[in-house]
Length: 543
Image (cartoon, rainbow, N blue to C red):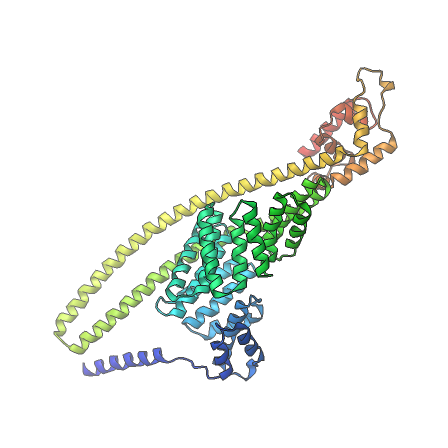
């Protein structure tokens, strides 16, 4: 019995020794870069750029990779050069905050590459490595929750995104990380803005602005001013915060230019609005380009340049289709899958902590050696209760999962409704485009010629009726093919058997011309040929 106690004590001491050991980094340049990370990120980045990783030990190389990823992230540079270093760090660190950091920056890289499912996996893997006591762990945990919130919002899961932002806010408050609070207040404000609560959105963004001014971070100040401009419908306030955003930083210049452009457009200063919308087109973010195209379309319509307005509308439609394609239902499914896994993992960790506590308690009981038989009975009774508790917990989990499945089904039905709504919006855009083509066609000289011919008396002698001559018919064809090019391409793709005359007939019908006028356009005075062509087109469409 005494030997058994000595063995348990040895194992316990060995665990404590291993837990207290850590991989030390002794390279002075790395230590200096780490110290300068929060006070002067540019200096830290320059030091890391001057270091050759080949001369470092394995542990120093892993630490170098994490520091380089952190500096590049703070400088808003691409994390792609750190990809291989982050992969090695994930495999090198078995657990702990360094492994969590590697997963976090890996997730940010994947998110910027639109690898949403992989980013979710990395973020949840990072959360598994983090606790709630150490300030550095809380800071990283808050950053991971913020990344998850932004990912959820990008998939139009606003409520779930807001939950993540609130968790991030709690973490940043606990570790007094003001720069993180600047970002998360902006995120919360933007979430309220998407939900239509402009007052709460504005309050959160003003909190972010106050913290950003304290931190003297021009990029966050510029971003927050842009976000505040989005919360106002009053033109002067919109213009004030938009110009403030332009003044504080170049990174938000394109997004801020959108709000400034709309403010000038509301003041009917169309040239200024056109300048700022075109400036916004330089942004690499696809959502900003979509807003810029739509703003330019509105400016052109106000100027009366419908041809150019149609071009901008086409660009807006293409860009919006690209945005809609990014919203992947599989990503939402992956989110729920990893949330369920995280819930199970959290419960498992709690059970492990409970088990460790019990093991320590049992070890103390063993050391005390008070009434050995009574201790055995107590443990036996305890395990029986634990088994009953596990069964009860399992039953609760089954009920929770059943409710979770039902909620998933409800959300799936809501997604179907949203998709149907988007399809209706696309059809509406197509109708507006066709109407715009009709307006352009009615301004042409050949249409005015057709309109004159349509006013002839139908009871007149057919031999005296005027029709479109051969040259005029050619002019009509070329004009229609140019104006209705998109619609004609759609007809050829949908109905390959259509001829050029079939397409011409469809466009004239779309313009609202009656059968008699259409017959004159084809060089005939008899409406019967129009009825015959309509019948032939109907047969081709049916086949």
